[in-house]
Image (cartoon, rainbow, N blue to C red):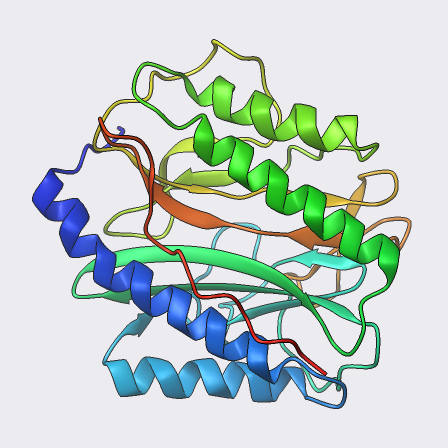
Length: 261
């Protein structure tokens, strides 16, 4: 069932969105050559404790997971694009890393992701990220009452395809509310005019991700980290948004990350 949130509830969800945005903004300042992925997870964990928030990831154990996730942050580097389990790895110059973070504050959840670079990003990776950010913006722009989920999916997928990248539909966006994953599913590819009708009060995570190569994926032995099967790099961006009569509200809007080096 798709839950509709009242204006008061959406206002209450802003605190979770603001916190998730603040954590990602802070983490972006730590992404630099030589930083360990476990250190990034520790920074996020410390911020959760200081805020009195609750991690959505640490005990998360869906059917595809080999075990509970055990960390509070997804760190997916280079050819890893989703659900990257932090491990003892120090970022190298030119690495790109997706940081995906979700937390609960006062009973409400927000979910967001960014891709950033250690040192100077490769031109092809920077270009791919710009496509991802445009796809995210296009998906958000389509999230208005009377449209359908397929309008969001088509806006995302058509933009990515037009830039020459494949779209994998194995994972995508989703509803957000009292828990991290709720109805409806929000695929990154679909037909306009199809799917559930968007109504004021729906809160969803819009989540474009894609790979430079074939689009085929595989899982690491850790049971979580998803990589491109051909080891090409990928990008991943995400916002939690509320559908309202006045247009979409980005609950996880963040300040511009400082340059990493």
